[in-house]
Length: 148
Image 1 (cartoon, helix red, strand yellow):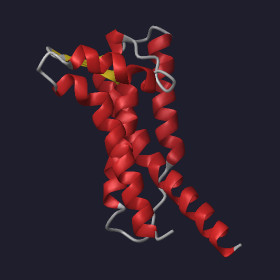
Image 2 (image 1 turned 180 degrees about the vertical axis):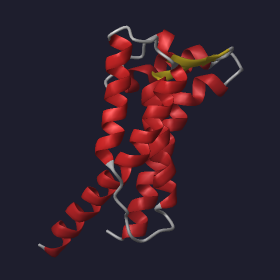
Image 3 (image 1 turned 90 degrees about the vertical axis):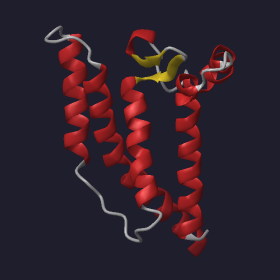
């Protein structure tokens, strides 16, 4: 498969995923509760969906927690960037994972309270960092399958 076509497909699938979990917040026409009921099962396997940890507005709440929203939105940024850049640059994944795990540990240990801002920030950092690894693995796997 052509690299550009693959990247466009990945970008639009990720965009659709992000629009899906954020949509109830931006709908203000009374359909947000129905949309929440329809879409929520798609996101429950990948997120605990605790209401107190989700981003909310007067019209609804995200269908994933702040940290998961950060991860997906963080992945969406490089997914868009790599539509225009040929070579995938790999970043430092371990620090991103350690920062997120440290936040989770410190919150659960009671050192400080859960913060949606910190959760979405650590999620953005991890999503931005992990996406190039995923893209690289997909492209490598597909190119190996094409040579067989």
